[in-house]
Picture (tube, chains in turn red, blue):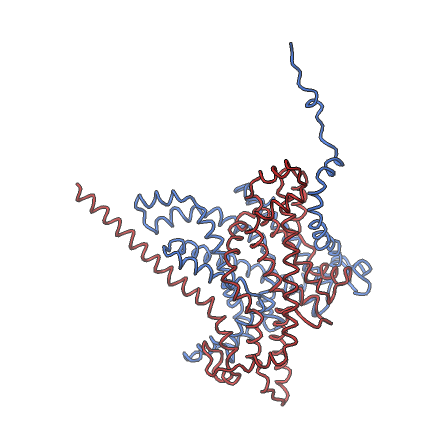
Amino acid sequence: MTANNTNHMHTTHIKKDTSQIVINLITYVLVTIFCLMCILPFWMIIASSFSSEEAIRRTGFTLWPSDLSTYSYELLFRSPDQMVGAYVVTICLTAVGTLIGLFLVSMTGYALQRKDFPYRNGIMFYIYFTSLFSAGLVPFYLLIVQTLNLRDSYLAILLPLLMSPWLIVLMKNFVKAIPHEITESGKIDGAGDFKIFYALILPNLKPALATIGLFLALSYWNEWYYSSLFLTTKVEYRPLQYHLYNVINKVASLKNSVAGSNVVITDLPGETLKMATAVIATGPIILLYPFVQKYFVAGLTVGAVKG
Amino acid sequence: MQKTVPQKVVNYRKPSVGRTIVQNRTLILMCLPAILFFFVFSYLPMPGAYIAFTNFQYNKGIFGSDFVGLKNFQFLFISGQLGLLLKNTVLYNLAFIVLGNVVQLAFAVLLNEVQNKVYKKAAQSIMFLPYFISDVLVSLLVYNLINYDYGFISNLVRSLGGEMPKVYQDASAWPYIIVMVNLWKSTGYGTVVYFAAITGMDASMMEAAQIDGASTWQRIRYITLPTLKPTVIILFLFAIGGILKGNFGLFYNLVGNNSMLFKTTDIIETYVYRSMMNSFNFSQSSAVGLFQSVVGFFIVLGANAFVKHLDPDYALF
């Protein structure tokens, strides 16, 4: 009897192990391959930016530069005007936009989470409705360009990205986790609603502020869309990603435009210049990424399934 | 002796609107920036949708331009333009939704079975990386891999003796490329969402199954997947609700103004953008945009009604 029993346990143990081993093996193989696919393209951009233009013409883009060259970086640093300007514009937009947006989103999120605020459902619906129905791109474009007269103004980038219904809902979910007693105790002490928010709630919202601040910062840092709509004519310095967009597409159009004629512009290292610009424009994000990604994960966990 | 209900409660009346506003003035003021923000950037443009019914001339403005009725819509229907855009948009979204969710769900479930915590964390972080970069850079990564002359994959194919098609001139390759790139970009994000749903599951059920000798596969098949079913269905329905929206940034950066590829890559949002910014055809552009908004709105309502029917807790409104 006892022998039978141990035998039985033994077989289930084996059975469990095989299925687990197979599944783990599949997981490690698939996930590792996918992770490599996530990293290698970035590596390839870096490798290409450090190779010489001739090497790329000869062997194409490779995982390791066949002859190391910093020529494209030298070119960029020799005339750093555009790049530095783009950096300054993007850093300013990101800093100002994130700070203002964070303040407005958390203030709105707190007020709309207050159970004793009679208009909270109405206002929330007013905000949420904008994500269900919009007038479309053309009326929005005409609003910015004709009504608000913001063509070629950085405000056309700064303002539309300040808030979104999704960020407000996310903030509401974060505020929900703060005990209601904190608000109550503030009321008993005679503090006004804004004082309660500012002095009692905000300090407890640090993880939420980190998460939502990073979502905001990312949307400002990666901004190229509104720039392509509104910063088209007289702007001296473009935000980084829009600058990169132009470098990528301009070198291509430059090459196309001279392809039919007999002019040879071999001096311009078109391919490596694009790659070097991409590295400089995206570098900070990739460098910061390991330190900030956990806040994004937190944000998705709180806000994604139940919006 | 009969005790009466205190006078105060009997005479209780709802405070007047003015009083409520005064009482809640601080909270209202705290919401005011957001109210103004959405008024200006979302509600103020709405009457401007009228432009879809006009022959818009920039100097005359929206309401000064000539009214032409449904002419813009008629043109788009008859020329077949709208049909093509609809077909592309819906098919791309279906591919994104179905393939994306299958891969994300599979990765989340598999990763959940890994015992090694460091690997689990590292894998999630790395998979999430593509979500962080702009579509501008994505287009460069793709160019790096598949452009005919220098692309990494092109060279690989050639060195293996194959022939690489000139993809930037070949419309037939792009549905595959765009679906792959979208999968690459969204897998990490979706995996984290599903992973969160799995972590939130009742751990005692898992333990009980383990004690009863259920194999790993059996636990996945009979516990993890059925528990995730509501989440999957709801995310799926909401994704269907957005089926007329597009991933504009991805499409526009990958394809841009390369008209050789439009047949298989043009979606509603790229058409709207191009016909406004490149051909300055504001009326037709906004007609397509309005069509997208109105039809999309009803699809969202339908999806939400369906979710409400399944589980009222998850409905949006």
